[in-house]
Structures are given as C-alpha cells and as structure tokens.
Length: 216
Image (cartoon, rainbow, N blue to C red; front, side):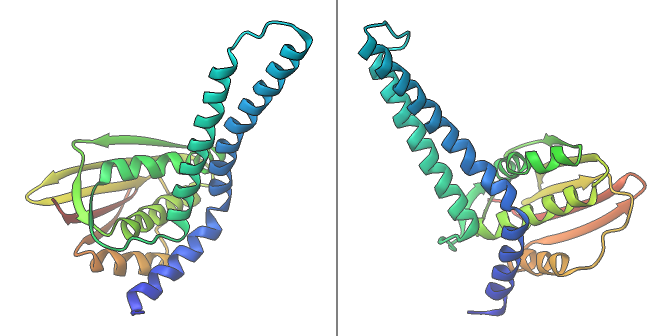
C-alpha cells in the first residue's frame, strides 16, 4: 500500500466518524419505508380477518414492501461504498451529480447549523477519475464548510467546463480563514494525485475553493 492510499484511508476514517449521523439518517430512511409497508400489511390482514374492506389491495401493498426493501438495499450499498469502496479504477462521472448527491447527504447537518446550500452549475462537468477518491475530497470540503458555519450561513456549489478542464467551486460564507490541518493537507495531495489542481481564495464574503480536473 502506497502513501497516497494510506492517506486516503486515514481521511476516510476521519470522515466516517464525522458523518456517523448522516449515515444513520440514510439507513433510517430506508427502514421507515419497510416499517410503513409492514404496518399497512398488518392492518390489511386484520381487516381481512374481521371481514372489513381495506382501501388498498393486498397485491399493491406487497409490491410497496418489496420496493421499500429494494430501496433499503440500494441505500446500504451506497453507505458501504462510501465507508469502504472497492472500485479504485478510473471511471467517467458527472461532478455536478456527485456534488448534488453529497449536498443531499449532508442536508441534516447543514440544517442543524442553519446553513443553506445553493447550486449554480453550467453543465454536467464530466471527467474520468477515481470516483471514490473524488467523492472523499468533495465530502471533506463540504463537511468542513458546514462545520465552519456553526452560526449559520450559505454554501454555494458551482462549476463549468472550459479549455478541456472541469472546474468546480465550493464557496462558503465563513468569516475566519481556513486553518491548516490534516484534512486540508490530505485534500491537496489527493487532488494532485488525480492530476488536478486546487486553489483557496479567502475574500470579504467568505472562502472559495476551486478544483480543476481534466475533462472527459
């Protein structure tokens, strides 16, 4: 295992601890659908036993429960892929879709800090890269922004493709400079390993972090 892989594993372990609440919320969402379906099936069975009509046909309820179980399984797969990804070969992906997915993932954490997340994308931001590593980088940046806005604020996600490069920004309204830390150092090394560049710009309105990757 090389230094980059060790660094990636260390950052992932740190973020897994940080995001326990978000992972738990994702798992509970899947279980709620199953619980709702089982509850409806139970009420339908009781109604059938007592000879009373039930508003929803039994086959529809059964289909609903099956879909809920499938949704929960997909949710489990997503969580496992976040926590312990198996695929490390470059793949094509949309940075726009990745950032939107991660923004949804941190929705509750953002709401707890009264943080709004805005999106302003000009295209899909297609690139070919190691998806698990880029997801880790983006999640680290987003959680850092949320944690830096403990008293509320705004995060803006934006991006475009220009001159053969995908460019996207995560901008937040923090008032203090971003401290140098293990997370910031790890992100810079991981971005460089993806043949990318990262820039940090502190200005009056907050902090802008721009990442550039090869398009394609």
